[in-house]
Length: 514
Image (cartoon, rainbow, N blue to C red; front, side, top):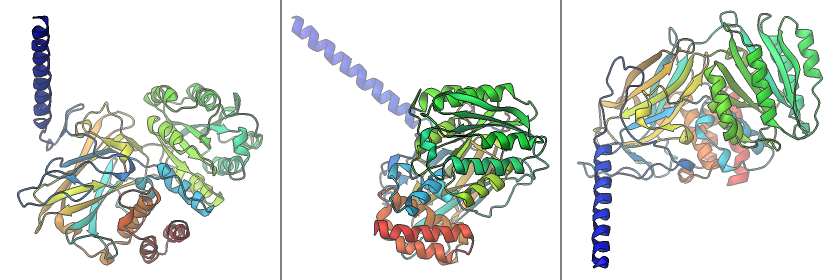
């Protein structure tokens, strides 16, 4: 009798579990909502959906065949099953800089350090600027080149560009910058501390007299080398930079904590307040993982002290630095040599110490009547659910004045497609008021219907950079291209120093990969 009762109870439990599973699935399928609201309120829900990106450039599983009998292309997301792609905006470029240094040293970079979006975002796209604050959206694209393996006539490349308005040095708010400098033994290698000192001296000379700078150094322990000092006292700041010396272990935790304490003490309500970490990202004392430090960094960011990472060295903790910058409402760049240091410290940092947009997110909603399937190239660790787009509690990306952000989609059209292709949206918060704004723009199939050779040069550069990254990270898409073809595309795309460097770097990779 007891055995029969046990069997009955097990059957009832199984039935309840099955019913719960079916109800959960029905709720997920019914979750799509209209995303056409003109003025969505803070915290409103956008279209639902799971993050699209997976590690190593592998897209989510393809869907069932549509009414025309066509299935999603291999490795692409079905536009019928999941039409919405959402991601946090990212302006990091460190992945490309570190790969460049590694290749030039005759070594293959680790696939785990390769992020295609950071390769693409390393190149000038020549987008138009908005008239006011916020973003301007640019969309265009092309057919794939004849050299792209297995590309059929319905294959396309979509470029989505976001651009903020630039800012002259005289127009920006004053800056209060706290430099946190790694002076541990690992920084003794040429191209580490010496490069940091050169960059800091250069930056101090570029800042305005009304800006202010503090200097913190750390090895086994951390110390304040110079408290917050007006830049008009340049001599004292240069002297403090010159006193930096290498010694001991790498207690990055102590350095960051003291750096934020110093930034809070020198906080200026009307200024842009930043902590700038200059390190090889290789801590070996104290907390050596990024996660335990993230909460403190997030709390400081909420109080308007943002983090910028500057990475150096042939041995470099790429993932560590990226995680810290992402959670600190900032971004990370990588400096490999003096010319790169001059570009970053002379052109980039002085112009972008302030912010144009907080928690910026982008969303592309594809029209399943014209788009069969798509794949966002990169942004795997920035992917968001569609409902997070209008949830302003969900962290996005931080973008400064004059910044460009590019996302590339590989996609396949339905046979005979014409008309509406997709809607592109961007949402962000004002850095001062935290008020949310949103902008959208439609894209047509015709915007992608041009031969690759006739596409704008920046589009061709994007293609070469993105698929170069796919080769370096050994993704499933690496076999679609040949490095020698990418090198030729880069060489034909323009005469700028940036693009020439890309062509030369691909040429360097040919001997290491082919």
